[in-house]
Amino acid sequence: MNSVLVASNRGPVSFTVSEDGVLTMKRGGGGLVSGLSGVTKDVGVLWVCAALSDGDRSAVRQAPGGRLDQAGYETGALRMLDIPPATFHRAYNAVANSTLWFVNHLLYDIPNSPRFGTKFHREWESYRDYNGAFALALAEEAGHEARVMVQDYHLTLTPAILRAERPDLRIAHFSHTPWAPPEYFSLLPDEVAREVLEGILGADHAGFLTERWAGAFMDCCQFLLGAEIDRAGRTITHEGRTTRIGVHPLGVDGAALRDRAGEPDVESHMTALREQVGDRRLIVRIDRTELSKNIVRGLLAYREFLAAHPEWHGRVVHLAFAYPSRHDLPEYREYTASVQRCAQEIEDEYATEDWDPLILNVNDDYPRSLAAYRMADVLLVNPIRDGMNLVAKEGPILSPTAALVLSREAGAAAELGDDALLVNPYDVSGTAAALHEALVMPVEERRRRRDRLAAAATALPPQKWLAAQLDALNYDLG
Image (cartoon, rainbow, N blue to C red; front, top):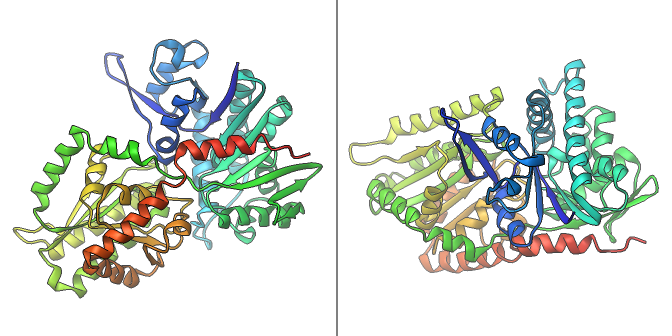
């Protein structure tokens, strides 16, 4: 039986299956996987995750009890859950990504959405079942008084369900997203809002990336549940149980990132990119085509910068890596199309025979992203709202002199704001001005800022981040 377990929707690996049935394993995607995959393998944590694809399900069905490590895969201790596809789709797409993500990132077009009717309540039942499957697997795998770390908005109900099954366990929940203020969180049906909050309060420790998101959660518990809040002591007491609130800003393992960025595949991408852009200055962004990432306004800011500063024509290139995300959802397909349309308009307006002002890539390629980091003169990170944003932390570690243009609504702004150029993510003109300020900033100032940014970005690497939360679970709440 396992003494430390991590549960998340996405796991450290994913599988694809070829036409002849051969399975290929690769690294899982997303910031959570980037932050946790190395450290969990090193310290022997059992990771419980969902099968996300047909390839994942094929791998699970060949593994005893879904334990991929026991089926011969070099994954570290890993159990993958084969949740029925229809249940998974409703829980993941309709609830987690189309509802809870939208609420916590303040993304709704309020005059038109949300609309919570009979269909949504059926989808909510699937979300309950999905969380229940995780709770059951954790209950089966956990040793007596084990510590369990449940991750993110996909699994808000799991702590309370697991608590009912295994009251001996020490349970933590961590939110990698922002948290909405109560007036926005209460867009959810009352019973659903209550169930989400009480689900997380089933944990002994609820963690957040910033003081701001932790405070918003406490506000929701106070106003929507009537819970007793001790802000100085960071506790929430509700229906006889006390949950301690923690703030744990996830950092980057700088040494591991630098080692990976020095590999031959990254070097070859640097050579290819340099052949494309020559000796021009580089503005780099690396994001998923996610609504909250604000890619379109970033492109509009670059277009406005080019209009205002013709002296930069032919001297700068914007490398915009916008990798596909959530294409099961129509809003995301349309957003990706908007990104591509905006990029084409910039090309049509400004490109010349010997200058491409914008290089847009929509195919996920991790080594190429690392190459772009290393080459960046300016890193643009302008989300509408973001739990943390590891891109803002990875870039300064790899680029020797990059200036960071950072949204004040990114969680990372709490740590990096003093040395970044902070922008209002809705202010296209302000972002355009910040891009120009970053490009003309003296190299010595950029280097000094970059050094401080890199130090802040590596202050709480995944090993320490995980250890701090495990230590918090040893705290006797009395």
